Length: 416
Picture 1 (cartoon, helix red, strand yellow):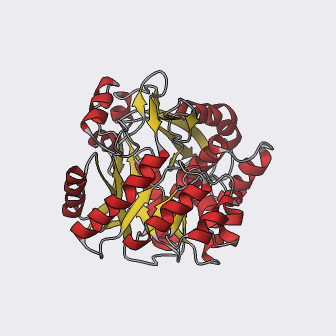
Picture 2 (cartoon, rainbow, N blue to C red):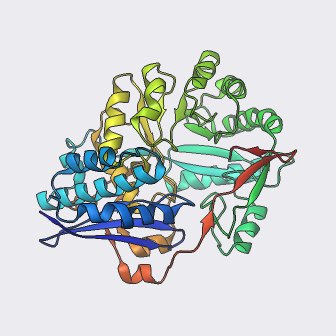
């Protein structure tokens, strides 16, 4: 099982994706997701120029050895570009190994620990009536857990909220997708948004009070602070949301400073989820050992693949911390399929984020996973259960797109 060909495939069916395809000397292919939203070409170049030449002639079965070779051998370790590249190679090799075994990938990871993965969807609205409609739409689609994002009075646009203004901005940028469906916009430079933390902290508790009054106590509700708060502000938000029994509060403060979560944890019992921008187990070390979080958010695509993320989950399980894998539309169906297989096997699964990809995305990525009754499940197809359509991809070339940047009302740069 010698690696004979390594291809880096960049396409934009609905949004930009970087896909790695590895082919062995006997014709078996494996796919990996290397998408890094807004920095796709950096990963593509790293793979083409630095990683692909190292793989030719290697034994495709030696997954762990290849992981160590790419991580330790580069000397300059970690970081999103490196770890997304390693993730793509790792996932593609697992895909190959499972195909050779004739088994769905989860069987090679220890078999099923559950019948399917509980997922959450994204409900949003500029105001409460729109939000309520969005929640009901998600319930009708089968979602059993729902993330709540809403507009903030005085702010023209807010992360994760679909509004008429956001839709117009998307149209002007050349896309008809909802803003919270794909926040990266087609433009030469990032769109700039404004932010007011005090207005946000005043408004959000009332939103969750209204949602609970309308939909009752049983519906699991989630919320994303998206790194925008200082530790004390995050602690205040967590405490103010305690009466509404959130499933989790996500990314309340930039967690590069892992010690900051001690302050948040001291002041609130609201469960905390962190890590969609983390790349390695070292990013979580303090958070896990001191039990400062409840859910690990990294995706397979950005955390070194199935091998890298499984290592993080195993470490977290010692401290009763669960998975909450990032699943936006900028993780391709290949990356989502890998997360499903891993989630089926691990003992400490918590929940999976699931944003449906656009139909044009599925024209390129033919996926066999299913969503029914609130659960995602893998098929019994050998490997990941995803194939890549080169002809369809050719109709969707790369086009620059960026996530927004954020400024405070006085013009200062802020976390987006």
